[in-house]
Amino acid sequence: MATFSERQRQVKQQAAQEAIYEAALKVLSNASSEGLTMHDIAAAAGIATGTLYNYFKNKEDLLYYVDQRLHDQILTEAIEIAHSSIPAKQRLSLLLQEIFYFAADHHVVFDLAERSGIVERIPIQEKQELLDQAVGVFQIILEEGIQEGSFRKINTRKTSSILFEAVIGILETQKYIGNYDFTRASDDLLSLFYEYLQPGPLVSERN
Image (cartoon, rainbow, N blue to C red; front, side):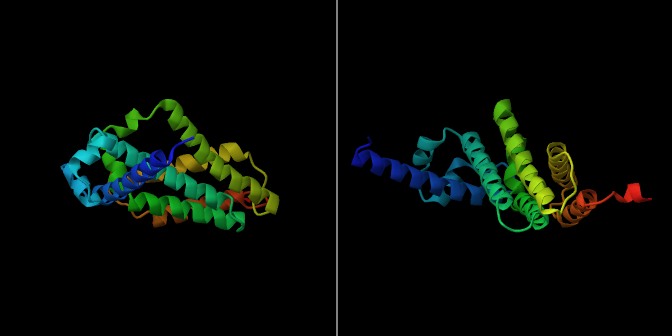
């Protein structure tokens, strides 16, 4: 059992780490290049640069931490949406909006992480687990939509995988052209999947 002093130290470390994360997120989100330094982040966090190095050995380690925290955050929010009590069709719309808004808000950090090789540092197994969880979020919504009668019976796992891959495709396409307004792409994707998911025969089957 941890002693009182050990608990105090843990609380202090957690508070410092949280302050560093918030400061790093702010600094990185406003960065126009990769020229920012650990000193910039330490100053924003209100701590000495040496203290920052006690937690992260370099900027890449800190960027990796921020990138992972952001992915954990959007996954947590997605899970909350998937398990909410609103109708499945609304949940699907809200989930896509949340993903695209989140990506737009933090695209500078994500792009910087990719350019810095952070993505390559993530173990393949960890990447696969993250992908499985993301697909699982869509699957929850689709399965409950079928139970509600809002969606027709489909292979929810395959459909969820395709939907998630479509989302990733939109994110990559918009990044390629330098446009981070996902509104139109999100609306088009929803319209396409709503047509596919609606009960009864597909439009192509009726023609």
